[in-house]
Amino acid sequence: MRPGAALDELVNAEAARLGESALGRDGRAVEGDELRLRALAAFAAAGLIQREEALASYTRLTGQAPASDQLDAAIEIARTERDYSSATATPRRDMNPALANRLGINPNRGLTPKEVAFLLNGQRTDGDAIPGQKK
Image (tube, rainbow, N blue to C red; front, side):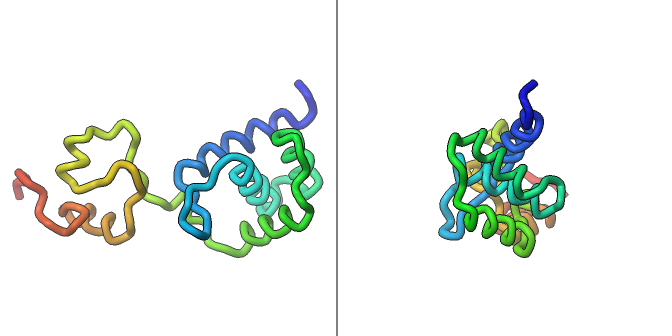
């Protein structure tokens, strides 16, 4: 196994996980190398890897080194800002479309906190009663 291969695998797995729910500041989906940078920054911010290891892994995975200030900025964001990537309520991709429709869930996007509250209260995501529900 080549040096750094285990870290690179972990970074790719974390980038894939982040890709399911990560959004940029402008609300667009985050993809590719930006996901890898975020994953490496999170590992470095948590003290799991050193900055130099993050730089080396990013270079191995993308074929180019990030700007030094780009990695530092990503580490600072990971260290100081809230991480919503694991707290986002996202419908399962294999969710039955009829169930999603009955509950008012759009399977192509995550749920808002308000929609989750309605579901937990036994209502549709819009606050209406669930059709056919027996109490």
